Image 1 (cartoon, rainbow, N blue to C red):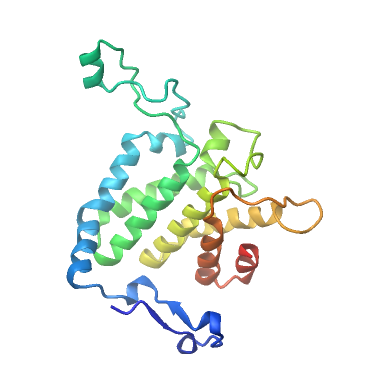
Image 2 (cartoon, rainbow, N blue to C red):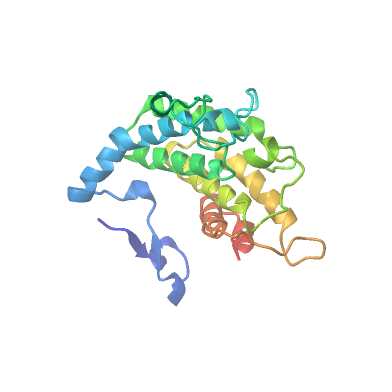
Length: 241
């Protein structure tokens, strides 16, 4: 298995810090022990990740045509089986909406993309396309995209960078978009996230009037590097810095 190649082979300057670059996933053929694990992910795990998100009601949260699950207090009510055993009341929900759910969808899309390199799965691809369509409908005109702040706390976006995961979620959606584009050639999510990255660039930076903060959870930086490499747009690399 070859995971990197000399930078000079890709036409880039061979500087010490850029001596090697990762190969695109489609150019890596994984066999043996890890090949079996990758096959298992492609055959079962990627689909299970999607199912778990749906069970947690994450699909409802990103669908602007359906009511948000909202915030459930207590956040973990008994399951039907637990309720029967304890004499407690089952409220119909075992979870509450979380501010980081968009990151879970990003990770799920990325995992699905990597599995599609290995094994084509039209059913899973159709489900991911539907998620992408929902995010396209949810995205605001200025490019902003956060199911939590758009549906749970509207009007408070970019007010709590330390705790509330906006840039972290953006990063995972970007990684999912890049991976899905590379796996399928479909640009819709990539274009959605380019619009969001452009919005972020309009909000953050050293220029007067822009926000100077950064996310309390690292992630957006490496995602912007991937976005720059996938699109050839140097402005995303500059934003990552």
